[in-house]
Structure formats: structure tokens, C-alpha cells
Length: 61
Image: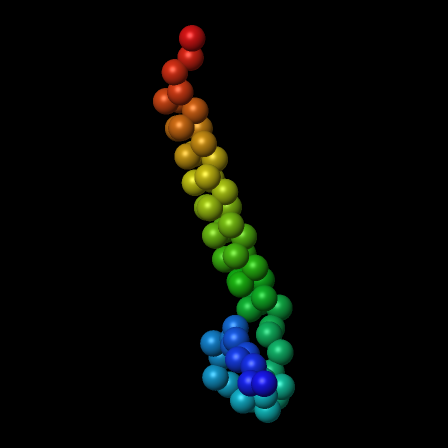
């Protein structure tokens, strides 16, 4: 039986390239984490704003 294996990875780097790459510096890690946190907060704020605005449009008796 032939099984089709789904490839979830888009990286085309060879394993050797990945394993021999120098580790991330603390500054690079900090910058990356701050960017991720800012993006997550932006999404959370947008969701919260959307919920607040949709609650304003509800008709109350």
C-alpha cells in the first residue's frame, strides 16, 4: 500500500544546514519574542474591540 505523507514543513533547508546553524543570540531572541507578544496583543485587542462594538449594537428591552 502506498501512503501519501503530508508535508507540513515549508523549509527546504537540508538537515545538516539546520544542525550546524549558530544558535540565536539573546538579543535576537528578545526581539523575536517582543514581536510575537506585540502581535498577539494586537489580535487580542482587535477581538476585544469587536466584541465591545457588537455588544453596543444589541437591542435591549
